Length: 303
Image (cartoon, rainbow, N blue to C red; front, top):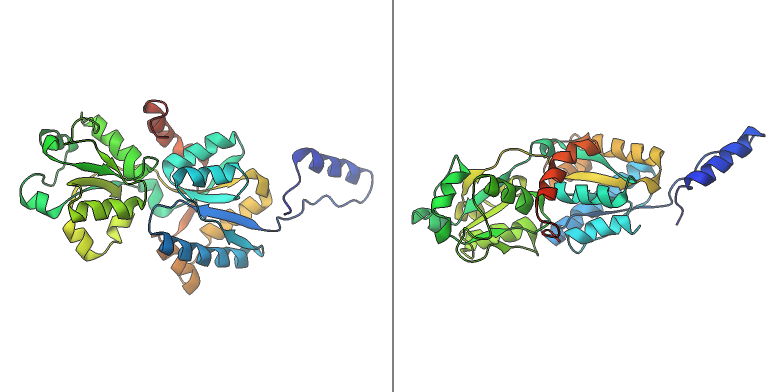
């Protein structure tokens, strides 16, 4: 598989061109590979990703192939191991990928909603009806009733399903590992859909999940798990790419994302699948706040 030439090879070509008319262009990638964080229904995710591959392939005139990730860590590791060239990650995993890349991985774009993201705390309808928990304006109100409630996060590596809701609980003086009845749970498989299902079914009294997933969920599921608290905003998901694809192709790929047009049916389908109106260009530094939250937890806690 062809990849852009390393820096020393590019320099050698430039040096030769100084002595006469020699081609200096870096060859284009023969194929682009990408993956997506597996944080909702895998069948839906796979179909949306195949549609995205087709649209990007047309826009870039380069074959684009989707590779499924088994879990959050796998999505990050695939990029580092040269199994994929770009990947859709959450806020915490975006920081993980940038750090693992040591200067070779950068943010390309984010959704319009990701610069103002939030988490919903949802409660089982019967727990609300019984008065065990009620809608809150201040998360500190949960402290008095937490001991009578079971609680579940999403995946441990999820920004909106674990990292940020844990952060806001701690800021409210609530230790999620000690405050609730029994140990807090984690939905390692199924992501936000599993969290909503656990709360709606009564398997957990309370849970935290991605607001965009919840807003798009079925009405009956939302009725069975109403919102009781909404967190402050933070930054979350992003497309990140490895420098191996070359600066020119990275710029074109960013342009392909930010140029997706809701007036074009197949492009609107992509935007709808990603639950946004558009993608916007973004830069690594916008995720510094998420890195600080991640690094505030004990070393190894999220692994």
